[in-house]
Image (tube, rainbow, N blue to C red):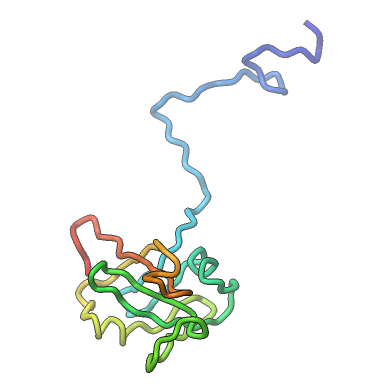
Length: 146
């Protein structure tokens, strides 16, 4: 066999390919890139990096969001206050770490006993409102949270 020829079961280094048994589960170091918003036990909103990208927020930027709630479907509705008209609503201010005080929201919806909660991105221009993004409640494994 010529030096550059290789057998079907060998790689470019002449090593034999080996198929791992099904009992081995390979685990990636890559973090999932989900778009979500959480409210933690300390009454703070957190907007994930992927959610910020969807919302058009540059990484490490401070930003503001108007936040509403669709109680029928348990959805957060968020938007840039420059694009979404929400008369009489003071926007939530988020710092560079993408956190904001959520106490007024938690108190208004009486979520104290349900925390922490997580909402995952589902839609843009929700209910026909241009610039409104919807995030739906992810139910806890033990039953509904909020």
